[in-house]
Image 1: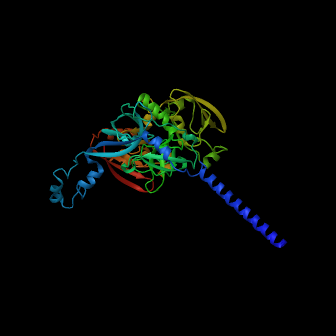
Image 2: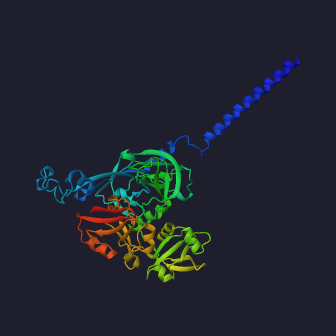
Image 3: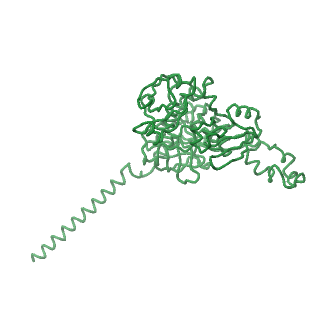
Length: 484
């Protein structure tokens, strides 16, 4: 009898323990499922609150001479020299102008996205969405359409500001803090991928501070929230429904990888565009390069952080402030800089005319010099003679120095102009020109100075085609044609 009672007690204890374990598991699971840091239950409320602030943008652009696509499909299919000679049977088929340089203009339509920032009608989007547009239409989430005008644009960061008529229908989005955004945080993208308006996608922040070669101020947020053509210019939102980025680029071969401009980078640009229609950036007037571990050891830089000054342009702010070649810039106004790109961004975002403290290492000793920054691109700068951004081709060029020649794989005695940047969506980039290419000739005229470049491009009229001879590192030569 006693044995039976003990057995019954054991069974009861096991039963109670089993119930406790089951309840504990359910509590743990429920707690985990409800944890806001884990997968959200849904994005319904966020989408409902923010979609009214997202717009669809349609543009119409006139492509002079039909562009490369028109000539490829509708020009002489055998190129300039037909194997049939004067008896080319395609001559009459394609019309009397098919054998020459004439090709008709055509209208190109494109789609993009944007978001409203105030009730006055200001809308933020990408520069490449509205660049050279003859007509811009903005469609709200409620279906209403407006004609838009360009307030200002900044090709270097691919940010643009357009304006529609003020209306009570406008629902501005709130700005967030992209600096506080952490890798792994949930984000939402809203836009018009492939023309599918008001599409909501979600993912996480995959990385921050990405450089993808889009421009001199690359500092992208990488996300796996689905971004496709048509999302450009739309907002990337945090879980509070605040804008933390402007969706801008995708990796063609990398499914699920998208990039957004941090809103902290864009906010100052948007303010400048709204107030004056253009962006003013600071200019120091130096040639720089990253400090490699070998250079850091050579110059005795213990923490291996800083940017090496390779050249100081005479008469520019750095020269007047006492900066010299072989100085190592380690901080600007107390903010440390560890790469040439970071230094460029910091100087560009520093107000022109400010007395700026530049911390440098010279002969192993640290010192501070004070520089009054000039306006980037000012006509009085030596830099404008040494480096020129051409609006027509979207190329930033510089003379080839021994340092840049070694960096990009050219002989030190090589002649040509180095492509240091290509404007996103610009004619040069669309033709296939890349950063690091060496421009050897234009229309068979050798390019040795920027004066040569200005002279030859200045001869070309709108709609005409120019020929470029490009050398790309050790890969060899490329011959390209661009219609300006």
